[in-house]
Length: 90
Figure (tube, rainbow, N blue to C red):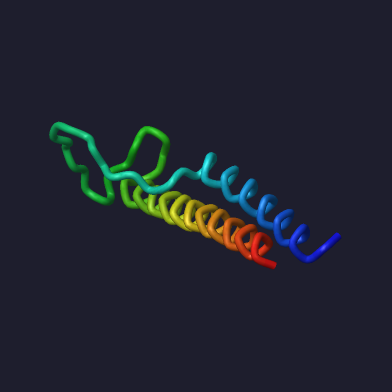
C-alpha cells in the first residue's frame, strides 16, 4: 500500500468513528423549551430518593460527558477529512 492509500484509509476510519460518536452523543443544542417551570430548593427530596442538588450534579456530569464526546466525534471527522485530503495530494 502506498502512503496515499494509508492516509485515505485512516481518514475514512476516523471519519466513520467520528460520525458514530456524533450519532450517539449529538452536538449540543440550544434550549428551546417554552413555558415557565417551578424551581425547587437544593435540599428538596425527589421521588427517586435523591435531592435536587444531587439530581442537578448528575445532569451536569451527563451534559459535560455529552459535550466532550460530541466534540471528540467532530474532531475525529475533521482529522479524517484532513488525512484524506493529505492522501489526495501525497
